[in-house]
Structure formats: structure tokens, C-alpha cells
Length: 460
Image (cartoon, rainbow, N blue to C red; front, side, top):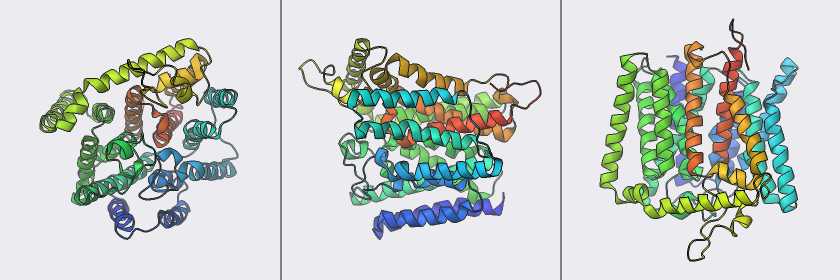
């Protein structure tokens, strides 16, 4: 293994410990920490402009304008309002100055149409209310900008490894914060939004605001597991240690969608990266058995987990919300009630048997919320973009080189995790997770585009 990569890997662990000390012990203002991050990234970007993209992933949880002990949810994060567009414009500008062109696709028009439709829908329904327009900007426009960026940069295993280094940084930070909060009883990161997992249910998620976001990006850590078996002792310890931390954080969240999404993602990675034949079947079977035993033991030993997994009240609650959301959709099926209107319109539908309003903001199923707000027209734009982005003609994943196959497998695994969570949770509230989905789609698109020149294949 290249010594520089070893230093980077170890450095990611040391940097996380230093940041934890700064915010938890020394109580340094998060704004000062952000300034240091930006300077370091600017220096690193002189060597490789792609570092800026990794920097967004590295910085985003720690740049809330409210800072420590009062951080708002990630949706209002400073990095998504300012840093993401600045990074994207900087990278695209550099690409254009060098190559005099920016790669776009006909498929992109579907998402542009969806964004335009969402803005018009919101304006007509809410008279351009700021909060709703801003939400559309955060979860629809900015992620698409990242998608365009990734299409225009060089994607290889080194870039994905940089993301994995950043993921290791996050995992160590989360572990340190979890231990600190457990030992001291003090919550470092709190939410001003009462629906947030940290503020309401005390599910651990640190600066990310929700374990959902952690569960979406964790699969990339396993990139190291499948490329690292030849490495020396220290890197190997970091890799497997990251896997253990990932499993621990997933388990302590008590979030079923995160458990299920991560399990499916890891299983897919294991299947795609294992050798053919008996070895693949043995690894997959062993993985399922080990996970089953661990979850079984934890479920048996923890009343809290038992309540989360078997609570009929929670399951019935979701069924009632889904049924009520469907009634909303049926009353305005084609164009919906308008982007950003679910909260105010749902109070006509979402009541329990006693006439008590049972929820706000969400149907707990992403596609149902989109159908309710934007109707069939919006849902067609929305789903068509993802279907055509993932649809490939000719080039199969088995036709790709080892590194490219691994990049595609890791990113498909993250998409799988997102989709599973989207069926159980309204992902509109998790803008980092939304952005990460588009990063995944961008990686996949980039790899297949580079391989479209293989003789006999045609890129769709």
C-alpha cells in the first residue's frame, strides 16, 4: 500500500480526535473550525480539484449556523445553502476553462423539468413562500448540481477512497461523541426542531441530526474491507475497526429502516465483490447468519429494541398515515396540492379515530408525499429521471474492470439503502442523504460513460 495512503487513513482518525477535543472539551466556536476546514481544503484542492467535493461531504454536518448545543437539522445547514453551490461552480468553472465544454445529457432535462414544475407548483399554491422554495432548492436543485459536477470530473477508485477516508473520520467522530454523551449524560448536538430524532427521541446521530443520514453513507466504508485484505496491520485495523463502528452505530440508533437499508446494502456489496461459485454463496450465507444472530441477541436483551421492532402502535400509525395520504392523492391526483403544502393540507385528512391530528409535514413514504404535493405529473418526472439514469444498454457490471465494478457496486448499494429508507421515511427532510443519492447516481453515470467506448456496446 502506498505510504501516503496509510498516512491519510491514520490522519483521518487523528483529525477526528482533534476535532472532537476542540468542540467537546475546548468548546471552540464551530465557525472557527469551519474556517480551518475551508483553508485546508483550498490548499489540498491545488493538488486535486476533486478534493473540494470530498470536502463538502467532510464538512457538511459540522457547519450548522446554530453550532453546538442547538444545531438545527441538517436541512438548514450552512454547507447546503452556500458551500455546495460554491464548490460546484468552482469545479464546473475549472472543467470548462480546461476543456471548453460541460457534459450534459438528454436525461437531465427530466430533472430540470421536475425542478421547474416544483417551483411553479409551490409558487401557485403558496405564493412563493420562502421556506417551501428553500426546501425545493435544498433537496432538488443542489443535489442535481452535484450530479452534474461528478459527471464532469475524473472518477476512479482513488476518489471513492477519499470519500471513504472522510467516512472513517465521521465514524470515529460519532463513536467519540457517543461515548462522551453516554459517560457524561450531556447531549452535544441538539435540535430546535421537535420532530428531529436527536431532539425528540434521543436517538444518537451526533451532528448529522438523524441516524438516517449516517445509514445512507456508511456502506462506502466497506470499500476498504474488500480492497484492504492485502494491506499491512495498521491500515487493516483501521478498516475492520471502521466496520465494527459502523455496525455499532447502526445498532444503537434503534431505527429499523437504517438497519434494513444497511443490511441490504452490505449484502449487495458482498454479493457483487465476492468471487464466483461456492465462495460467494458461503460469504453471503455467513453474513446473513452472523447478522441474524447479532440482531437476535440484541433484540432478546434490549426491551427498547423489542418495542421498536414489534410495537403495533407504531406500525398501525404508519398505516393510518399512508391511507390518509392516499386519500389526499385521490382528491387531487394529477397536479397535486402544490409543492410544500403537505403540512397544511394534511390537517384535513390525518386524524385518528378520536379526531386528534396525528402527524405533520410527512406521510412517512417519500413517493406518497411527492404524489400528494406534485401529483402524477411530478411523480412521472421524478421517477423517470432515476429510471433512465440507472438504465444501461449493453454495458453490464460484469464487463467493467475490477476498480470500476467496485465503484458501481458501492454506489448501487448506497442507492439501495436510500430507496429502502424512502419507503419507510420521508427523505425530503434529509438533504445530505438526498445529495448523497445524486452523488451515487453521478458516480454510476460517470463510470458507464467512460466504458461506453467498449467495442460492440452503445451507451444509452
